[in-house]
Image (cartoon, rainbow, N blue to C red; front, side):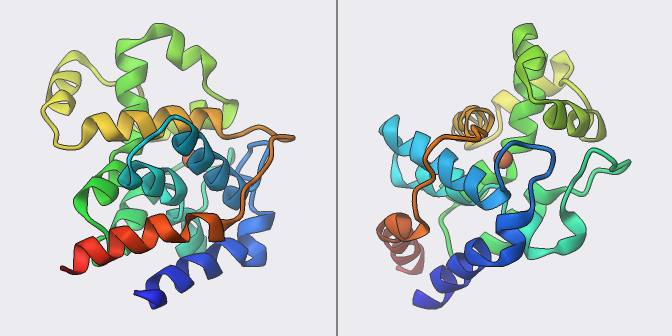
Amino acid sequence: MGDVIDDLEALFSAPRAQALYLGEAVSVAGHMLQCAALARVDGAPDALVAAALLHDIGHLVDPDVAETDADTQNRRHEEIAAATLAAHFPPEVVEAVRLHVAAKRYLCGVKPDYHDALSPASRHTLVLQGGPMCADEVAAFRETPFHQGAVRVRLWDDAGKVADAPIPTFSGFRPVLERLVLSRSR
Ligand SMILES: [Fe+2]
């Protein structure tokens, strides 16, 4: 169990994770830690705290997956992240991570104000990711298991980009991750 969590901690502490900003006001590592802190403040279950913490690791595990304002293709970082986590974490975590981009498209489809409040970088990638969901896609998304968790992750995702907000340490989330990895291995 220690191995996978140590590997994740190493991803967060790598210079690349601290230096990669992807057009936002915080680094990718700082962003994910802020998101996990917001999930915890909201009293979210362990699985969603972990999903908030890990949702963007696709940008870190594969250097070619980091998305920028200059990108002209969808690099599907959510699928890379889900594939990285699938062997170690329960589906409540993996699917919330996998669906966090679909959740952005969903929220844009059902809440006109939501799109306008997205960061410029998120609006740019939204276009590459397929734009707001149409009515049929919205209906299908609502039938997708774990979609509610993904929507919660998405809202923390949007809020966890504050330049001067405190950034917690990864180690404070280790007990959450340990409980989840243990539950997956039983
Ligand atoms: Fe994010």
